[in-house]
Image (tube, rainbow, N blue to C red; front, top):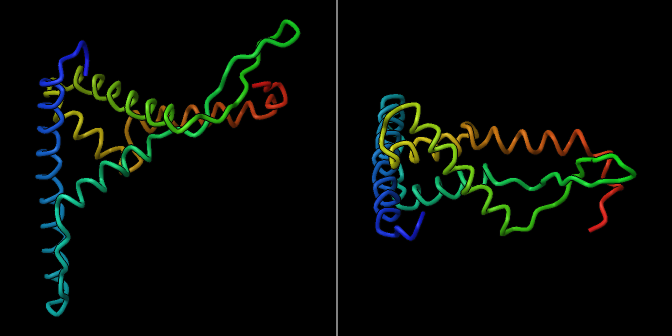
Length: 155
């Protein structure tokens, strides 16, 4: 929500849920057709679509959530990037911020509406792809490269 536009934000979110629900439904139907075509004796259990939708969204947020960050610490005239562990609240905040940021970039390049781009980004994030996941991987890579400077952590 930006500038208190709660109605607009909720409309985008619910449109995104409808788009994701339709895509999940298509994927499940495709899987069921393949499974039924291969063996006629296989009994397919129907999983509620809403459960799949919530699982997909939570998986996407979990895949984008960072566990480390790097902070700049100045020691003896030199500045080092020191890895630090993030709090749970900041992890979730960064994950959502990166998802929205990458959605805005995707919308700018593709000229689709925001809810469609958000659905695409969530699908990519659940598959461990997309710009938000790349940003998380880059941050973890940077923390991994600077792990030698962890001795300068004082907080």
